[in-house]
Length: 321
Picture 1 (cartoon, rainbow, N blue to C red):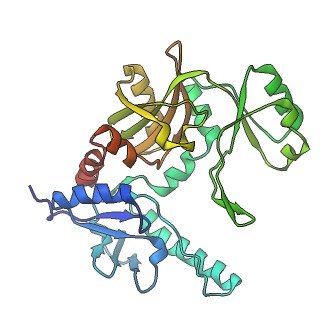
Picture 2: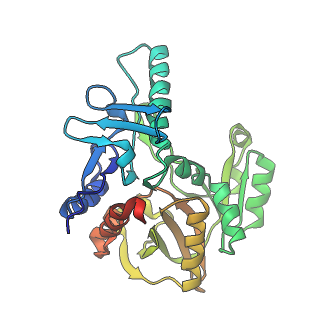
Picture 3: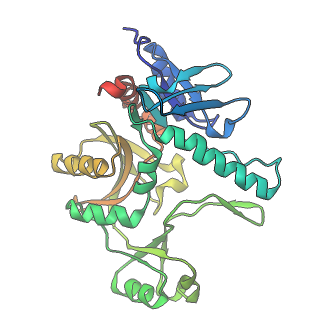
């Protein structure tokens, strides 16, 4: 059944996003109108206008791309994926900073204020959920098992923590793309010993965590109230290092764990999120972290789980959820 009598779904993402393509293909198959854009396209490739006050509705607005046109008050859902903001490289550094701020608070403000459509997920909710110490505190309150964790910039505290646990890993608090001497660097979870800790720890907070001796890992994707769980077998401490070395299996989580993960997600006001768990040899599921906008496309390819369909179902339903 075609649903074009309802408003469009906005999909905000960069040009090369295979995961978004999977969802858009499913929406197209259903006849759901889609307007895809990236905030970095502002200018000739993206035009936006919004008016406030003096009319019955809080706002009326319009967003145009070279091929699509959307009245913002009619949008049914927003799929906020891998959005990037413009850097304005042709402007002077100071002008570029000013232009970037105007775009983020102008275009971003217009979009953030859309409260009628369903957001998957609202970028402000994503940002709140991205703080790992906040995640760990919430997980503890919900009764989820979490490894002992220390966040500190005190090298003495770090040394004491490492000494008190059989094995400890270090990982970044925020994944950040950067280069050193022109070479792109990626931060992985690494085991750390006390003799590796020195006064450089004082520069910024670091996350140290008890290592779980796991039998396998689990990536859990939640979409609305649908829960997809995939077991990941690997000999690596951080399985993201080599996707070609992984084995996958579809698993079913215990009911109480599913309930807790749903509560965790909704406590942050999210419709979707990807959880990383480690399962030890006693069968305990340890929550490692939540990625509120995590990748999942490769898991559908390997398992056949209908993840893109679940996203399309949620976005099609939109505001009438």
